[in-house]
Image (cartoon, rainbow, N blue to C red):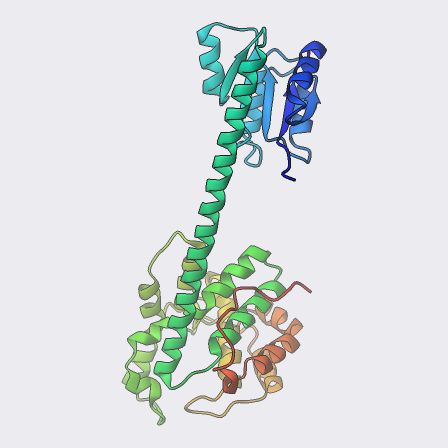
Length: 356
């Protein structure tokens, strides 16, 4: 059975409240308020009403003041309000509509007109909700599509460097673990984790010959490699979107060093954005513990030791302290996403690790 719409009747007259009860109760569920305090309390108490019938002449705050407070609250602003009043002057009606009311019922109350206007506004409210749900679903679909493209672009870059790996999955989880250990809020953790796959995208601007070269790089080749943070920032571009904005920060600053000896900007200490500091540790752990062209991987325990030794030099000491708290989780993620399983794991890593 479909749930009946809930209407809040706010009027200081008991007779008017009783009249609305008789009129509306056969088709709708009702809540009542006799003054402004009760009105504001009832409208913000579950279940939230689908429609408010609001008397203008109320004790304490009047109807105009009440609707102003509702419109100032994002969670309540969309509830339609029909003003109920003895004021029949068109100027009063215009004032009510300008205040945000969707309709105006004058006293003495006509049952047929009231029922018609209530039914019309509830139908419009249903249509608005249905549209919002469609927009929300489409927005989520587009968001997921964009994330999937980002992940696959990052994986394509890995293949260009020499083969299919699970680096995208590992680094995203490392970033999420560090962000959580630093006490960042859940939304920020999610954004940084989703942005992480693009941190090395600037290597698309580096010659494939250099990326795959097994011999030591020449000075000019190293110079080309060192340009990849700026190339990555240029590829991503500047955006208002939080995820892409943080991806750009990570791409540009993940090779900066706490002591100022990094690149490309030689930023030092707190001048390095937090996402860059986080990614620096995550990238270092990834580089140490996976096979590289110029060295064999070290154990996760050895990587933890080396990162700890670089606190205050290469890495932010606070990020290293957070890393040490979750080092066992890094080890678990490293084991979970081994490169030999790269063809098995899918790319669905949008959910950050659970809070512990």
